[in-house]
Image (cartoon, rainbow, N blue to C red; front, side):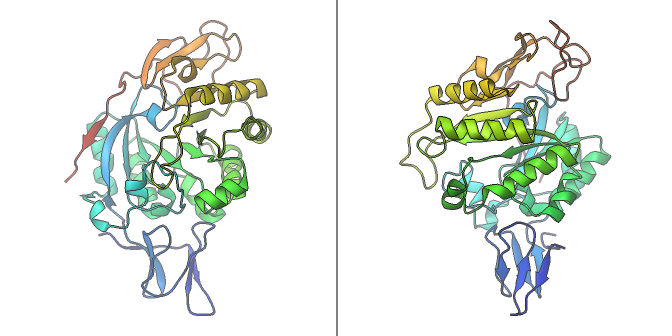
Length: 355
């Protein structure tokens, strides 16, 4: 089965159907698909066309999502479908998120099959990732239920572009999320993503204050577009004011891709500068990604300044947390979810076939 009914839509007076899943509010005639590609108008209602169909399954390190404060070192069973409800010209996963070919969805799997595969491969959690899981809302939630029943945690990797009611339902089934805050100016969102900043801000505030979901944030810094000191500082001040100092922030490096191949890669110095601005603003946990930077990828105690989790890319080194997640040097509680001992999955990437 690949087509299932959905709930978030309504009929318009002109005969079209409006999808109410995300702020894009696609208005569809019979047979048309939304911008996301996977939601379509069939028989006068909006259906999801990719339930049970994936672009692939893989076991990743949890740090790759990136989540640095959610059971470090553990493996996460990762999968996505096709399509996306944003139109980012710099998409780093464009082969899946921009796909308009159903034959990209080679792997079929029910929620129970995914949960069993995650257990079989020794995973602690399942990640809905690669493309944005909000667009396969029903498949993600059905899978999340099966994973919770099996004792697995659920992780959403998303741009957070979703309307309030489906947002409430979606995050009720998640345990952790990394949400992309793609820039801190609406002009960037509108011109490069086809979206609006305020909707993502609302999701960030909702997830942090209204749910128990562990939240981390990622900003991909693109030279000349969202990497000015002023914009980085404004973003960090907003995070501190609206979300607090303990929400981890990841600055990651852009590489030329999709429709922005004329833009140079992000210099490592830009990431280090952004991290320094964030720390000076008062954020406690700030990371760099997509570059070799052990200092910027390690976790430092905000109380005494000692390294409590050493990282080199996705490989853990130093571990100076006690069994309660406190700094072994000074006793400061480190925000997040930690086991008494770290996982040892390392940087491995293990593709998995379910069929």
